Length: 498
Image (cartoon, rainbow, N blue to C red; front, side, top):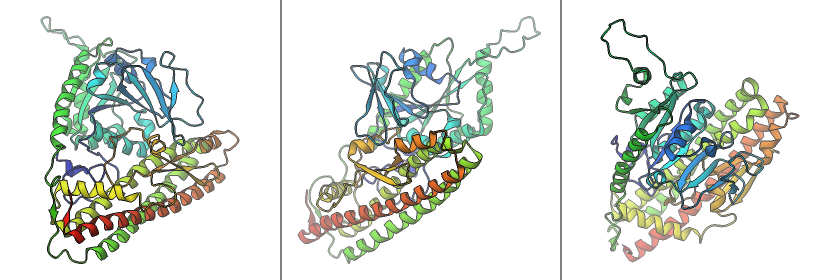
């Protein structure tokens, strides 16, 4: 296990992790959450046999792990086998046949994730997540992958004997290497089998193991580019035997579960009893108003800048990439990354509000238990101040470059490639995706006008910016009202009640 302080990497919402200042998140990276169950994220290049390795771990047929192109696969434990597809724009998942993996619903767009529940003993210890090939993820997908790997805790990189590391793969591994994520490498024979070394001319020389030679060559190549992964485990999968890999992952999961439980104790200072208000808390109410306005403005400005950069990448894809047909996949993946980033920024800002304003009433640094109690009270009180559509809201880009909305926790959950532990922060996540009709429109051969696609993307991103600007303003206003009420009640009584 690679140790690493939780606060160095940030936390997924404003109610988890040790108190203290954190830098404003301006990009997606590894996110650590001790409340998550240990999981292993499988990545790697195409044609490396990743599905065969996962099937060998679980004693399955590789065909059982087939999912639509671009979708993530989550394997979890259950007493009965089932398969469900989570599609943006719907509140309920679609069911697949588990006995006939190729039989599934006709969907207007690919699911963000497919969940396969199995009565596998290994899945009792940790979950498995299979991802799209690294080459297809692109910049946006890599950010989602980094976030998922941090939450999971382990990364399984599968590479074939006849493959080499690409620049994108090395960049991803370099990002992971600087985090607490444990990295495992599985080497498969690939299409050409194991490389046989030249026989030694020495008559008494020991025979050379081609598997060991291949693994060592891959390891040497990797360490030249990413030397900090020297402690990563390398485990070849020979003739479908994944026993050593299964043991290594199981041992890691046992240690990781103990490590995570120590980071998130059930009882922390300040959780119980009455907390007195400081004798002179100052003009905290006016400070709360100013900071709410400042936080909302900063996030809106940053997201507007990100959308402007995204527009340039979309135009490049239309003109120099896959053209109009590639627009939905690129934009949808960018929207997922954009949603995670916006969520992280809102969580950061709300946490800073609670830490600063709450600290003025109850002392700095704010005890973790006190912060959790304030957070719980604010969440409970927000229902009194929400008007119009509820805050658990999905924004869907339509084929007419407009933005439709769908509310509800289940609708938000359908947008996650890797679902996380139940949030304990104040605000629900930001959720933006492409509607099925939009996906179908640009996949139709008749809609291949690049000029029309560029104009459409500009209008769509502008509508997203306007809608998100209104949404963020509304969210922070609700937080201001609810947090102000909680702290006013404490200031009036002189204590934070138990």
